[in-house]
Image 1 (tube, rainbow, N blue to C red):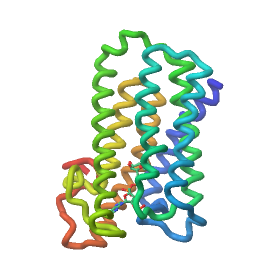
Image 2: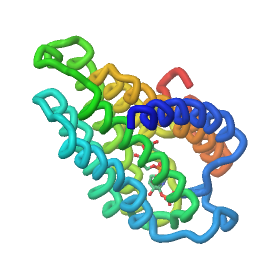
Image 3: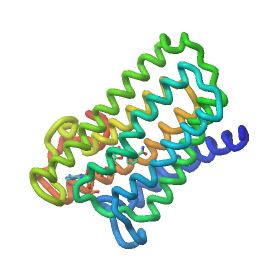
Length: 248
Ligand SMILES: NC(=O)c1ccc[n+]([C@@H]2O[C@H](COP(=O)([O-])OP(=O)(O)OC[C@H]3O[C@@H](n4cnc5c(N)ncnc54)[C@H](OP(=O)(O)O)[C@@H]3O)[C@@H](O)[C@H]2O)c1
């Protein structure tokens, strides 16, 4: 199992690099970039529910099979606070969302299986956190970052949903919260969350996950901003960056 863990991490880093580069040339065909060439598509609620389920289930399975202590128990709680929201709440809040291609669901499912595996295996089979870890600067700063990121992510997604409630189906220019600074503040929040996770676990799987998340979301934020400018022209605020406020 340890060999599989090591190879999965190497694979994720290598494929993450490839993903990061290729997503500047090909944009994943879901949401505003959906197209028939990505194959048959299903209701987005079902898509999100399916593809995010391994990251809820796998770490719980590893916790049942491995050794749990106070620190890894709390870390599991932090992990699940994100994934219960993403897998069991977020899908049911989507308003008039575009259909999700099965090809995208399959790719995300595969990534989530690997991610759930490396993080769950690390926490409950390999790590050796002591109680004093709770007082470490990495843990404290990591938790703060994680929940700040989660707040920005959930708030930004809600602002997008409210746009459709207020202005009807289709796409509108968001003007509230962190949307004033970047085209994709939900991605910014997500990246900050997993930076927090990498810090609070101080682990290679944490770092791997952060890298893979950035590999997916940074190029997509680039495409999102480009899309907004093409669709809304002069009406779209020029000062808005892609994903990192004031930077990129
Ligand atoms: N960890 C990871 O690697 C990862 C990867 C992908 C996504 N995520 C997270 O999953 C969540 C959703 O991601 P996403 O890529 O679907 O985000 P998104 O493109 O921002 O879309 C989020 C939702 O808002 C709607 N929407 C987007 N822009 C809108 C606008 N201008 N006006 C009205 N409605 C708008 C979308 O509808 P349509 O579906 O109709 O476009 C969708 O239902 C985010 O929180 C993201 O951080 C995480």
